[in-house]
Image 1 (tube, rainbow, N blue to C red):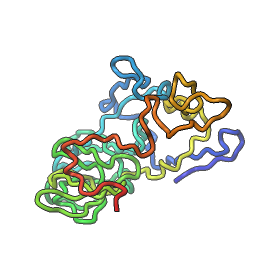
Image 2 (cartoon, rainbow, N blue to C red; image 1 turned 30 degrees about the vertical axis):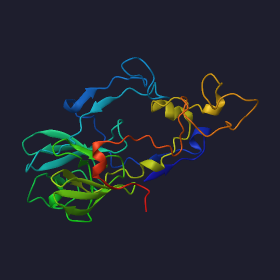
Image 3 (cartoon, rainbow, N blue to C red; image 1 turned 60 degrees about the horizontal axis):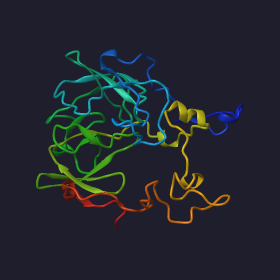
Image 4 (cartoon, rainbow, N blue to C red; image 1 turned 90 degrees about the vertical axis):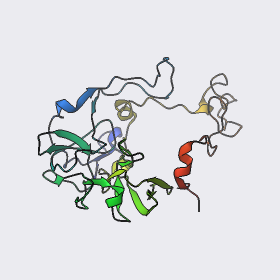
Amino acid sequence: MLKKYNPVTPGQRFRTNLDKNEISQVEPEKSLLEPLPKSGGRNNNGRVTAWHRGGGHKRKYRKIDFKRNKFNVPGTVSTIEYDPNRSSNIALVVYADGDKRYILAPKGIQVGDTIVSGHENVDIRVGNAMPLTRVPLGTAVHNVELMPGRGGQIARSAGASVRLMARDAGKAVLKMPSGEMRYVPEVCMATIGIVGNDQHENVSYGKAGKSRHMGRRPHNRGVTMNPVDHPMGGGEGRSSGGRHPCTPWGKPTKGYKTRKRKPSDKMILKRRGKK
């Protein structure tokens, strides 16, 4: 649910925020925290590879259980917490043997709910994890593995889910949020339900300072630069660029395909956007 603010300051005029009533007011579990050093968008050579990054609030990384390999041990949702490193919320699960793990908080899960993962005799209930062989056709799932045992890689952001469309010859057909149809091995693990915090995409920061808090620096368009900095730079007064939009290195943008052929292409049944 979104909260709006009275425009008592210019920064609050267009600001919207998420209602965090479901978030537990607790400190994160210390045993599941790791340091998260900042890179400022630089790689190991010190060169900028991700533009407009830097600054921002200091964070610690929360170790998330994407593998869901705690089989046949019931766990209770202890807290639902904010995670600064992702768009979705996370849930702290305390298992019957005392083990504690963070998982992605699905939509509709609440503190006190019981979840379990396993290969058989697992209920089709939100938050439970099982192989795709056990999931009924048409079910929305998230945190789906691409390769067995690797851990969930598909549908992990807020509000995301994929739909199981079919199973055939050891493969499952998934319909992605983009419309792409893709094969994955049917023994891959998946979690029932949709990732929570689905209103995340509707949040408006309202002011530039909030972007800086999130570690985003100001974004410069190519046409505002000088010719030495960008192919679309220069010109008298404001110009429209005078050529098709491109990167600082002259590669076309807006529709120019850069994806190379790779072995996983054979797992794509239908490309996104195709009829």
